[in-house]
Amino acid sequence: MSKTKNIFISDSEKIVADLKHRNTIKFNISKYDAAVEKGVQRYSNLELARERASFIKGQAINHLYEYLIEFEKNSTRNGAQVIWCRDSNEAIESVKSILVQNQASLLVKSKSMTTEEIDFNEHVEKIGVETLETDLGEYIVQLAGEKPYHILTPAMHKSRHDIADLFHEKFNTPPGSDPQFLTAYVRKKLRQKFRTADVGVTGANFLVADVGGIGLTENEGNGLMTVSFPKVHIVIAGIEKVIPSMKDLGLLWPLLATRGTGQQISVYNSLITGPRKENEADGPEKMFILLLDNGRTNLYQSDDRYEALKCIRCGACLNVCPIYKNIGGYTYNATYSGPIGSVITPFFKGEKEYNHLSFACTVCGKCTETCPVKIPLHNQLLLNRRDAVENGGDFVWNKGMKAFSYTFSERKRLDRFNGKMKNTALSLAKNTLGKRKSLPKVAAQSFSKEWKSKQ
Image (cartoon, rainbow, N blue to C red; front, side):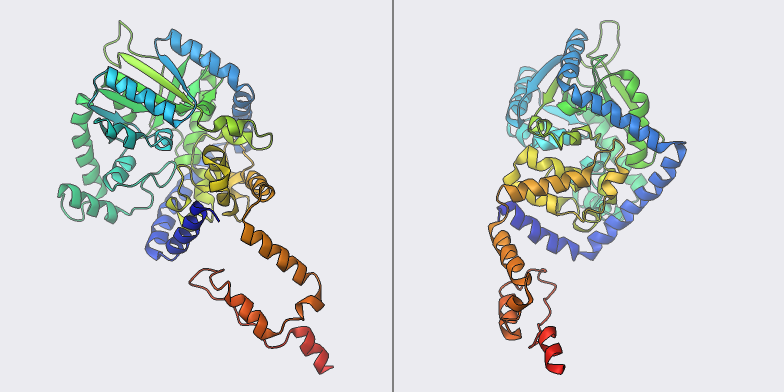
């Protein structure tokens, strides 16, 4: 059994027994569920919207090379510099080079799961550059010394009381401060950082091929300020984020918002097509776009799971997943959690260490039903399981299942062992159901023997 699998099992057992955590998640997800249920009612034909979105992303993935080349050509024409990165090491080295060349000491960062994927903050801080998260949820988890808990909602695991306590500890704000006060406090605190930052870093919700621009969606305005104030703008985006045309945003942006938060459309949606032009008053002087592979081509080469690259990171599959709602985001020990994370992480970080995630699934199919781009997630998890078994799987589990299959295939084999012997065997696997559950005691005689003796 791999180390990561052992950690996963141990962490799962602890977190499912944490009633405070489960109640917090249940409450926060219920708010999203209510908003999304209302939001989807705006569509006269939601299924048609999903079909069209799936087709657009499918076209982009099926012609990934051509659209990426088109994006690079148009972005370069707009004045941006495009850098191709095979893995996280190349991405980090490129970022370090940009920061050193531009003598950066402070950078502000908008919410980006791709930067989390490459451990951006840790690497940048090692060369003496202060990095500050500006999304409120990301700012909260950064203060707490934690990673994002959820693809869309980084601090979903924290209640408003938890956040008030954190701010009181870090900034001596009044105990029990309400969310409005804390939001205003953070806004004021970050304003000066935006003005003095040397570099702004964002991800990209979409890489728009025909105009060479990035589509950026947010609800707080921090993304726009991250782009507008600093002299240098760095974009880090996975290669799968490309879409064919600016016209596609009219469908994808509202669908992303509806499935993610229940909004008709997010508050701020920006199409950024390069650094500041000579006749423009604000914006960055330089723009660098890092296109990250980092295992995506491994997934792309899979004939039956490449469709996972269509994901638009709305987080909807996490919110409906019964496993996620019980074990939470941190238990996955990966940047991307929930159903989509369980599908893609083995390709991104190695099947040997992460194939156990695909077994953390009830195969209920809710993730597939809710996906706005119609990725067959539960089927892909089953395919991941198939590969895990074919590539060896867990030695102890495999041997145990073979013994189980052999013994239970015939009644006479099972009856060779009396109740005492069976209980002894079961005692060797006393933690099979976890430390908080125990296996039942087997009767001294089997039912078949009891039946025969009574006849």
